[in-house]
Image 1 (cartoon, one colour):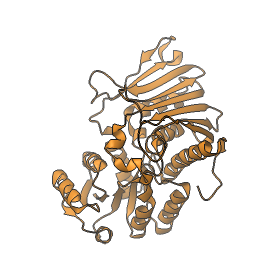
Image 2 (spheres, helix red, strand yellow; image 1 turned 135 degrees about the vertical axis):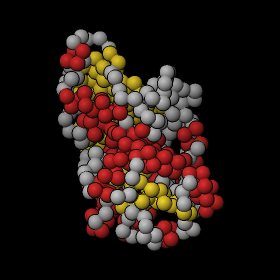
Image 3 (cartoon, helix red, strand yellow; image 1 turned 135 degrees about the horizontal axis):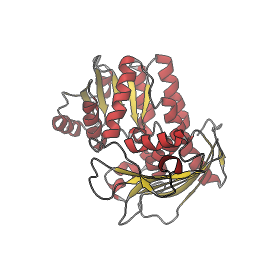
Image 4 (cartoon, helix red, strand yellow; image 1 turned 60 degrees about the vertical axis):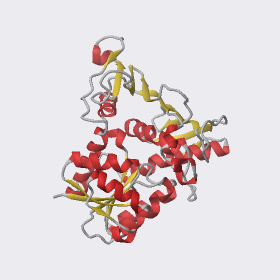
Length: 350
């Protein structure tokens, strides 16, 4: 059975999701809506999407649509997600699921009430490199993880191509737009987070409403610590997204491939693991080659199609989307109050 999806938003990510869903197979992108009809028409022509809706109600009234893919500024995810769910559509929402925990709860409650699925775009847990990292950790090859460190180094251009990120529509700054990625990857590998601290930098590089540089600290339920560094303020690079895990019996580091065939091998994974290699040297870990830059998105859509058409369980759930947002919201609260914040959050206004 084919899953028929409609895109809500004709920005940059509409191209990625159209390509990835088609590569996944068994998915038809049947339509697109954007408040800018001309932009939506141009995107539809470019991507061979057959229908351009002139209004949001027109999309919701299209009985051929099984699933709506939300590709909007963060502050609009909850409103349009809830309306799509209430119209009987499944919803796949770009990260973050919403910009507050309360909105995530409203979305999840609506999905449960109407019997539809709500899934976040946590594409990085579908990357081969992150998958291999998780396999190694779960095998015990580096022992119990005691410390994790993530770096998200991007330049002002990230905000330049998405100007709404610089406004209140972003729902926050670099933490919600970027650090939510390592937050959900770390939680997927290491388990739930128990406490969160955070500080923003005061030396802004990007003219934006919220933070362009921040460091968040996480304490997991296991007792492990993590530090997440995130910025949009790197002037010249090297730009990077990396994760390092320090275990009692070894070490793993995942980073961007800066040389060689970056399409087939967008990431590199190195390990120190006597259990894996029989010595204490640093080894490069073999990773399955990627088919394209969007391999993680393609594998996500394969998983989500199986869930929406065949009612199979998914690697990522709507609750995972909420938990990732909760970590970031706690970081904002920690910076604002100067105090470490315990999870789960109990303040209904957050």
